[in-house]
Image (cartoon, rainbow, N blue to C red):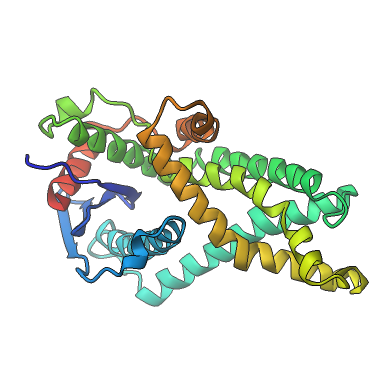
Length: 300
């Protein structure tokens, strides 16, 4: 099969998207049982900044979000019956943007507000504040995943998620991509986006604890501002400035943990993400594995 490529991907509506260094492929099983695929070439122009540690993580995350959105849009229309009305790009983009706003409100705004109302002040006890904030955030995320896992469509999405991981495992082990071979592997993969999210949650606890001290260092009169102005400034800094930084650091930890799985420090960050995948992946059917295989073959 030649030199191994580093590939990754995600589950989409009734299918799988696989990203390789040169292109990305989406495979979807239509209601008529036929598997359809789409391959999109990636731009060959790459600046040197894409190889810089931390920055490359932010850029890769943005790139993956864009590709993932395009793949989801295409799969959503392919997985519907021919007689059903297709979703427009505007409708899908609006839905995705609304989901992002919902995610920020649920996993950023609510934990932040609850921690304050508990009685812990961010400016006075930043470490304790962010520990509590982090515990609430992770708890909300786990509760959210657990609740939606009972939905029929989400169950199928999680099955395709498992099929994606198993097919990638098979490819990385240099075995022929067949249903029988893919079935030998685990639906859990160390480079999964779910693991990345958990690492982000953990890194955020440490990183966000530095914000009040940094703000006070550059603005000694910060505490003289009104209460709501302080809240707005601190929350905006964590979302607009520190979130990209946390994402970049988390990306480096994810890559390192996949490369050095036995390192005890890295395992402290990676193991919770592997546990989390027990919720976000399900054992796929043979037909779902066929779709994942089709996507991997097209991508490589």
